[in-house]
Image (cartoon, rainbow, N blue to C red; front, side, top):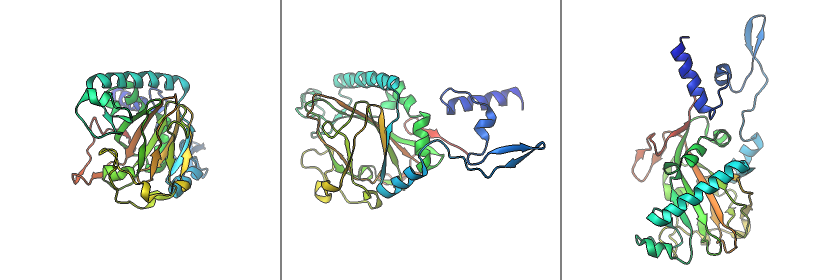
Length: 303
């Protein structure tokens, strides 16, 4: 192999491992089998190697319930960095008006929006504003989890920051994500992460087990034209509340009914969500396939 090809392959390995150059043989060896050397020849071992990511039990739980709790995923140093950058982006958004308050009807009046008494704040595509959130898209532990469900070819649908300020954070009503997105096939998965301890009091996620198996027509909320509200169609007593520590995560299907309650505590609840899809996903709003682009990059791809 000439020097240029070798350099290119090592550069690809560097990118795919977040800057950790591992031996090239480790990058190209079969994922589910080991190669043993015997008498100068290689043979395929029958020993199964489980790749990093979800366990078989977690994959089964996801398919049965439509979600799976991961627990602590991001280390404390990364959480602190993301908190700082998250707060900075929302401070800038307040000044420019480049955010939405999902708790009230859409308005272009920035002063009116900033003065709202209830706030469920959203910034779409943090990855296009901030390099730290762009980098998080490629975080290997996250992609390993998603690969367990979507396979090795993973594309970004979009990301979003959902911020419930202390004392007056608004709710996000019961809904299925794909009711908003209208994507086919409806197999997108979301990694929902929190930068603060999230519990039943300040906006932890509530999910309805098994609800991902069927799409449902949604009703608009009477409180805001930016949200659906399917409270009449769910039985809250059957919901599961997933409390998480700062840096914790859960993964859910795009058709799993979920809800986050208001935050009336003296604690913030800063969440960041990455939505993943397979390449070849089609937007039924436009009828077009979603192309690979800066906004919708390939995050992992294996031949």
